Image (cartoon, rainbow, N blue to C red; front, side, top):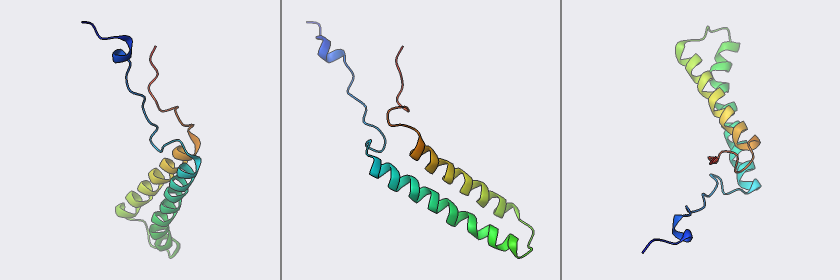
Length: 86
């Protein structure tokens, strides 16, 4: 026996954050605030005139990447990240 058309269909993929705006807003805003908090450490020492070390530059780079992740969660529409079949 060959399987019917129902067996050939893949299971629907659930979006990463469930598709609810409150979840996306909460997690995106939380990541943006975390990025701001991470960024404040090296920035505070640079305001005092201390030249940035490699660790401070790495921390700033990490803060930028966390902030970018938060913006992507807020901006990219739900379902856009799903793979499209030709």
